[in-house]
Image: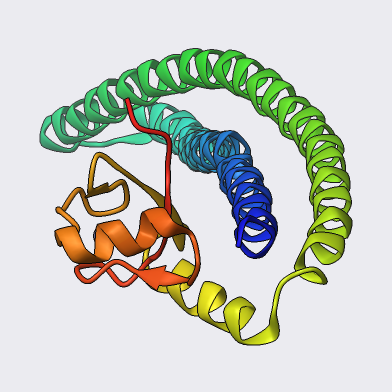
Length: 236
Ligand SMILES: [Zn+2]
């Protein structure tokens, strides 16, 4: 009977190892995914900064144009001063000139502010571009590292699968089918030892009569609680 159980126990050990490696493989891309998310955020931030820069530049150009136009209007108004006939006209023109000057002063201030903003934004963009570039490099390196690890793990799985085939070939067909069924239903543990009349799979007691039969080692038995294949383990 030992000969019937032994390969199943080995098979289960191999399957558990394969499962462990598969789990490890599934965990592998997590760091890459996190890095990609960081990269995306940084790229969006860079995009926003560039948008803001072009807004400020556009606004600056508009104010520049206005300033030019208003400066030439100011010149014309100042020329008109010499030609006015009445004091009322003269006062009105002076008021207009004063208003244009005030507005132009505001425009000049706005241009200075815009220039400062452009400088700040350009510096921020440069830093952000460097960050994006660094993160891109990290993503590339992580991708490469991941491919290597995955290749190694796939190699291990392939080797285990070869062992598995050899071992599975030594198991009776119906028993193998039962094993696969139980493995999938019982979290990878299809065959388990009974120690001190307790099933190691579900930790329930085995009825005395069944336990006695189990110790005789003549027939394959199933745990009445979890249905796993059971064999008599070493007492402790
Ligand atoms: Zn059980």
